[in-house]
Length: 324
Length: 256
Image (cartoon, rainbow over all chains, first blue to last red):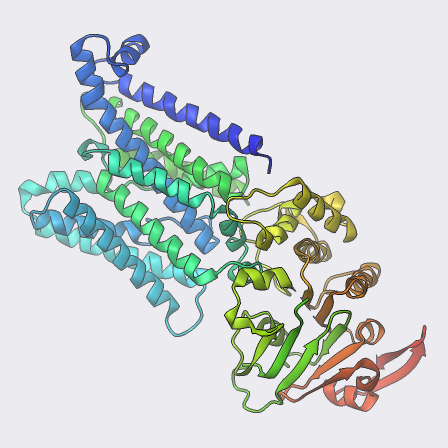
């Protein structure tokens, strides 16, 4: 594929992402004009606007972008792994494991990086369980893996309900909001952002191998791919991306499902194109969704997970319906 | 080229205990055919020779080196495999599908070059599917897909070709065209090793044959020595009538 053909859609998506971010920092309870926003972003303008944009809105916007990008890339990777466009960190129980890990550490009074570590532990435990159980004694098939993931995810759902029932009442609103997915609780956006950039840099050289792997493990092995190590790397990588996304903004569904699916319809199936496109497109989508969540019933705010689900479910059903 | 060799090789078929070990070398310029009834292990043998399955005993070597000690990527530069079943996965065009044959030759950061594109297009042309190059593979007929799969291996340019029923789904003309293409590859110094259902195609185009019996017994050698009607009748458990046509024996199953 000529480089130009790859760069143009990516440049368009990057522009869309930037546009969404500018919109997101200028819209809110105190609306700012484009000129005011740009002035605040470049460090001039009045002090109130600068505080509002740089300290309140920008971190949240960046966190939304990074979370959306991470979820979309994780979803796209899982879909290649399972050769199934319905695969997603949520469907496979990764997010459930991460959420349980995070909730447990919150109940235990831990904070900050320990919550992230605990969430990653939960996602990885979920990974090992799903992969180990799906492998079992027999052969390892995508259908079996998908079904194991769905059942494990349901199990995590039950544990989450149990934890919520046991949690002290004063903790409940925060935990609930967080489980529905809410960028408002995001701390610093930088770990998620750095991970997103790293993931893109790592995944682009692996892209052609992923293309081959998407044609089935035997075909991939015949064309020189080391299938099993590659599959593990994808699963662990996707776990890390999901855990980081979950600790940044809670359980936001459908980004990992809808964004790769929509981009594939437009851009084809070359992973070298799709994965960076997912990072940009997923980020832009979640920034827009979060902006909507902040303004739709202002001054109240919705959890962004509600918006992505309301956008995602009909889109996905429509896509499924149209594709036969 | 490094020749593909089976040394004391017993393939791993569940529930089969016996079986004669295979000792054969697929030399450059040879066209091998593997014949046997359903379930004799033709596909398993092919996958074992490609290093995709472990043998029960013995080993497969490529040149001086056991296959298991080579990196998959360097194996893929020397061995090409046409599968009998193919998974579709995500939608891909015919040209993209042929281009993945270049995978073992490209480094991770390399994009496919114009040269790779030319090779893929020449392969599609050789298999008479170049007019379909922008179509999605999932929209093609079975025979067209089969030719795209062969074109992918042609793009891969391996020294040794392993093919599982390459004439599946092909009409008569394309069966002959594919066999001719494989023959030309052998004449150009490559080696061909294929499973075939059609006894007469094997009799016509192969110079070496391997007969694989359901109990694991096997015999192999020059085609003229293997095409013995009594042996073929016991192989397929079917009475055959032998006639001569176009300078080659033709085997017709007898009624009843």
